[in-house]
Image 1 (tube, chains in turn purple, red):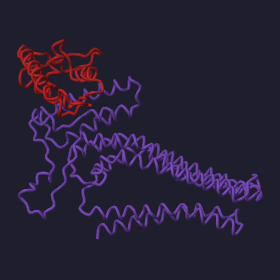
Image 2 (cartoon, one colour; image 1 turned 45 degrees about the vertical axis):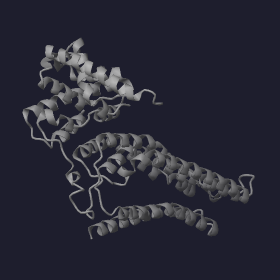
Image 3 (cartoon, rainbow over the protein chains, first blue to last red; image 1 turned 180 degrees about the vertical axis):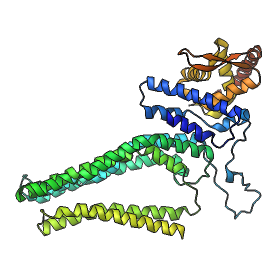
Image 4 (cartoon, each protein chain N blue to C red; image 1 turned 135 degrees about the vertical axis):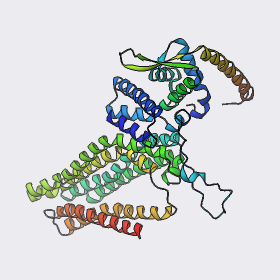
Length: 344
Length: 110
């Protein structure tokens, strides 16, 4: 309920508080309260009800004539392309509230698929790890080669399914390419709507973050427990299974975190500032992406190489905590470098 | 799903036709419209509120303080005689509009 009040306060903040304005605000507040109560009675959660009420709010510009306020015109959209030289950049068209809502809806519905695909990427080497460690220890009746073949096939299948999901999602989001690329001029109404959307999604997102971080911290437990508590022979046999459990926990955390991020990412895309040099930003984003995508497999390779070649199953688990801290440092370093480059 | 632009001119007609039955308040009107249109058209609260205020300014409806079924204070709207005449005109206009557009739509496959 506080979110609804805060939303209306934000929407009306841009206008002087005349008596007609206060009357409109009070009556819209009553309408939203009634709708909120009705949604709760229908069995929606508080977050869902607030989200629906805000989605159905509409646009204050519609009230311009009744309230004696001038409808907002996006600052740059008034540029007349005919009056200025052809070399002058014309600001891209602003997005309408309808477009923004459709986009947010599409992001929300495709988000589960996106989260599942990322989790599948993380999980893909699990079977390979389990089978190769078990066969190396002689615990299953497969040769190392057969185990490796099955493991690699499963890995490829996971990756193929995940890539398929991402392509399907990309197609569903294709109509919104202009929004994703930031090719629009921001407008007050859409900005306020996007901020309210992010606010209403925040509590749910915080819970998801807490669960995910909890899972990631606990993810080290299977490997750690096996290495420290079990006798060396047992730990050598089962280390792959423990590692797969770790991957499963990391993947579960990633899924929970990413699935909750639909509204927040939509709001972020809608409130991004338009920038002339889009290519530059894409390049920066891909730099972090490239490092993140090879870092995980690299760490896995180091872990296996050290463990197998050095026969160091007892101590090689240290790769994981050290690797995690190192990645944090690398990411922080990259971010500050990017900020420095953006300021320069 | 009908776009907000396509139906904009006829929100006044919807509100007046609902108020012809009995006086009502904004949320109840929104709910009745949603119940009637189903998934074909979702009315925004600002759209409905601006329609009601426009009708009030032009004297087609009047407002008075009342209480909802659950006893809460709500601003009620009642159709005026001028509103009833306007509604009849809008209905006639809609029939003509529909008939004209239909002549162009006829024979076009979906």
